[in-house]
Every structure is written in C-alpha cells, then in structure tokens.
Amino acid sequence: MGKKKNKKEKKGKGAEKTNLKTEKNLEKRQKKELLAKGEDDIEALIAEFQENDRKLTEVQEEKTAPPSPRCSMTLTAHPDRDELILFGGEFSKGNKTYVYNDLYVYNIKHDNWSLMKAPNPPPPRNSHQTVAVKQGGGQLWIFGGEFESPSQSQFYHYRELWVLHLQKKQWEKVNAPNSPSARSGHRMVQFKKSLVVFGGFHDNTRSYKYYNDVYTFDLENYQWTKLLPSGTPPPPRSGCQMVVTNNGVVIYGGYSKEKVKRDLDKGITHTDMFLLTPDTKAADASDPKAWKWVQLKQGGIRPNPRCGFSLAQIGPNKALLFGGVHDEEDESDDDDEADLEGMFFNDLYTLDLDKTRWHELELRGTKVAERKRRRKKKDNATDDAVQESDTEDSMEEESSDIAEKVQKLVVDSNPTDNAPMETNESVFSLSQGGAAAQNKAELFTDMDSIMKTGTTSEMADESESEPFVPCSRMNALTAVKNNTLYLYGGMYEIGEKQITLSDFYSLDLHRLDEFKTIIENTNAQEEEWEDASSEEDDEEEDEDSEMEEGMPDIEADEPASDYFSRTRDFWFDLAEKNSKEEGDTLNTKQLKKLASMMAKMYHKEQTKE
Image 1 (tube, one colour):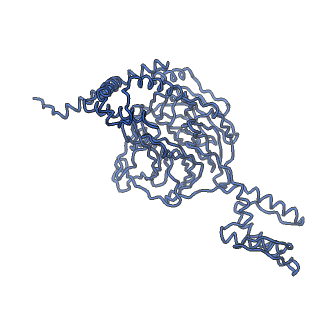
Image 2: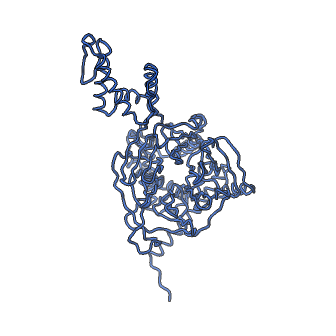
Image 3: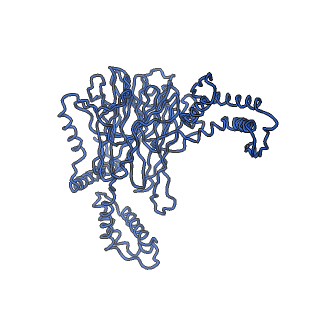
C-alpha cells in the first residue's frame, strides 16, 4: 500500500506546476514580441552562427588592422611566444549589440595584429574566461560566457569548455561531465595542474542567480570536480578577480545584486578577500573536501570600493590593480529606485600577496626634465667633464648637486657677495646679491626639501609633469609578458552613453615610469551612440497615456489611502487583468496587495510636483 502524500507535498507540487506554466506563458509571450521585432529565438541565432562557421574548412591567418571596439573579451599572454591572444567580446551602440568569436593575435616584437580563423570555433560570447597553459605545445582554455541578442532582450549563458591547440591552430570542444552550470562573469585561473573556476552569475531577464561554488578541471585527466571546502566561503558574486600563490588562489572583490522589493534590486560591491587553499591535514588530496576557505585581513592603503577593476599578477607574490567604477546614488532623487552615477577610476595599486598588504602606486615619470638639466650643465662645463649616467633613482644625483653647491659656495664666497634674504618657514627668496648668495639659497632650499619630503626642489619641479596614465575606465583587459603589463580597452559612461574603448598601452614593470601608447584613444564612439531607450520611451508614453485615460480621477488633496478605498474595485479588476496577461496565478489576498500598490504608485505619479 502506497504512502499517502501530505498536504505540504501536494502544495509543493502545485507550486512547481504553476511556475512551469508561468515560465511557458512567458516564453510564448517573448516569442511573440521577438516576431514583432523581427528577431529569431536566441538559440536559433547561435545555431546560425555555428552553421556559418562550419563552412570554414581550413585555417586562415592574415595581417589585419587592430580589433574593432569591444568589451568583455579576454586578452591572454601566449605561454611560449611573444604574443597576446584576444578572443570574443561584445559591442553595443545603444540600440543594437554585436557579439564576437573573433580570435586576434598581437605580435609584440613586430607591433602588428593577425586575425586567425580555424574550423569549428566556439560560438560568439563575452564575459567568458580564458587560461593559457604550456602543455601540448601551448593551449588556450575557454569556459562559459554569454551571448546577447542584437535587441538586448535575450541572453544565453554557456557551460561549454573549449581548448585551442595553439601549435596546431585547432579548436576542440571538451565534453567532460559534472561541469559548472551555465554562467558568465566567473573567474578561472591555473593552479598547479588544474583549472580553478569560481563564482559568476546567470540571468535570463526574468530572474538571476549569483554563484560562490568552486570547481577544478584536471588538465591531465580531463575531469571536473566540484570542491566542497571547509570554512566560510565568500558570498556569491561575479566580476571578482583571482590570482595564484604558492598556497592557493586569492579571490578579491566582485559584484552581486539582491532583491529589495518585487521590482527593485540593490547592487553590492564586495571588498573582501579570501584564500582557497588545499587542506594539508587532509588524508586524501583528491577528496573534494580537502580544501578550505580562509578570509584574509587586508592592510596598507586599500583601494576604495569599486567593481570592474583589473588585477594582473606581476610576480609570484605581487599583483597590480587598475581602474574600476563605483556607483553612487543620486540622493536628490525621491523615487524608490534611485538613479546611479558611476565614478570611474584610473589609479594604480599593488598588492603584496604574502602580506595581503596594499600600496598605492605612483609612476615615476620619464625624468625628461632631469636629463635636460644634466645636458645643460655638461655643455657649460669643461670638455673633460665626466659623462653623467642616466640612473632610475635620482636621489644620489641630487645629493651630488648639493655637494657641488657647497663647494661653489666656499670658493665664490666674499664679503661683497653677501645679500640680505627674506625667510618664511625655510622658504628663501633673494632680494639682491651675487652668485654665492644664490647658491646658498638653493642649497638650503634643497636641504630643507629633503628633510621634509625626501626630494629636492629640482625633483619637485620635475614632478610637476605627471607621468601618463590611460583615462579612467572599467573592465580594462590586462596581460603580462616579458615583465611588461599590457592594458587594452574597457569602457566608461557619459550620461546615458556607454563608450567602448579600443586603445592599447604598455607599462614597463621594472621602470614603472609611465604608460606607453600602442593604439591611441580616439573616443570615436561618442558620436556613434544611438539611444535605445528613445523608441521604448515613446512606446511606454503611449501605453501610459492610453492607460491614464480610463483611470479614476483623484480628488483635490485626497490622500492615497482614501483614493484606493474609493476606487478599490477598479484597481482590483486591473490587477487581476494584468496578472492573467503576465501568466501569474495570484490569490485574492495577493491581488488586493497588487491593486493597492498600483493605486498608490498612480497616485504618487499624478500628485508629485
């Protein structure tokens, strides 16, 4: 005799059926909307891209212009050659979005780009992750990402794992079971002989989910393993950054959203730091539980809260952070849904991974002013003067300058050369006098400057010419090769416009003087943006005006509660009608609540000044 199902189980099954029915109704409605826009279902769009790619039967590689503007792609250093590999990305010009699966190769030595096409590539995507490894003649591994339809109304998240065999120039889709769920905005690094994947999110326009799960992929056995670390894990997030140490993987920052009300989300910028490390006390190192989470305490001068920053590993125990954005709410906005304004950054920080200590990085500059002064001194000196060396640290040279001034002061001093000086807190100004007095003034000024700031007045003059740093942005790509940091693209906002950059820079990590421009920032897209919201706003205004025609009038000085009590039947009928159109099944209590919300929102909109 079978067991009798209890009421809770029946209720759960009923809710599940209702959710499935609602999902199907929403899908039907979406398909109708797509037909009206003349756009195919998103899976059909992806299949069309793949069908076109199948027509390619052999590898094609040709020199080309730099990539067109795009963001959310990946830039990866080749494991063996002096090359950088750029894959995928998206470009939005307001009313239309393009997603790519192009693969570009930048030759560092020759400063040129190549477009490489190989048969059966991954379909177009952005917000994926890539890792290059040395094994098998060099491999580029790609996991996850998303595809966005041209109208920006559909999203598809991938859970595929691909590898490009760099030596053979051959794509391979790796079908390994137990992979992470479909996602984008995750992070992936190589730790020893495995790929480590953490976090990310999934969004289908109706609901979203952020992840904090972690997987490893064995590069030798081609097997996925979901880790079950002990300790408290990081909260779910996407867009964090990960770097590798001898002890494990460091995870920093990120972004997530949480539901505040039914139609209102709140963004969260994470600033915490965690270490995912193998548990040395575990009996079996291959056990998914043989890992642990450790929250790290951060010291030093920390970056202020931001997301969309870049974090490049520039050594076994050091990382460099650049840029990002912090959203600030407009406090003057009285609406429930506050307007956000992004503050973009282009500052630099270094992170000591051993001590988890931050340092703000100021580039040294090229010292052009100093070299000019040296050459001028040399021209005025005797022919047998010793040539000066162009060292990175100018402190020793400035000290020799002071010694020269002391010697000149002794040689040139005589009673007639003394001149009165006006002093104000060790700042000297000459009223009149000869060379000795001037040298003496310069000497004491420099000595005082060194005591207070560690630099001389000449060094201070030099610092007035600030070293070049790329403009503020988020989501810039970074890669390190041959002790040089390469920084490519990103995006920033001007009002409602999202400007996608395609500029390219390098920074010598030994000299740390200033960024060198490889591709200039032209800001060409500022004129190309076509506002996607204008047509939508017109449609919404038409719908609003049609809806307002049948609304009950609001009496003079009538409170919202009184207005709803007087017009309750109208709003209840409207709530019931809307819920049916949306495919929602609401009970009487839920309909009353929805009716009240709609009435109060309408009252607020009509009575606001």
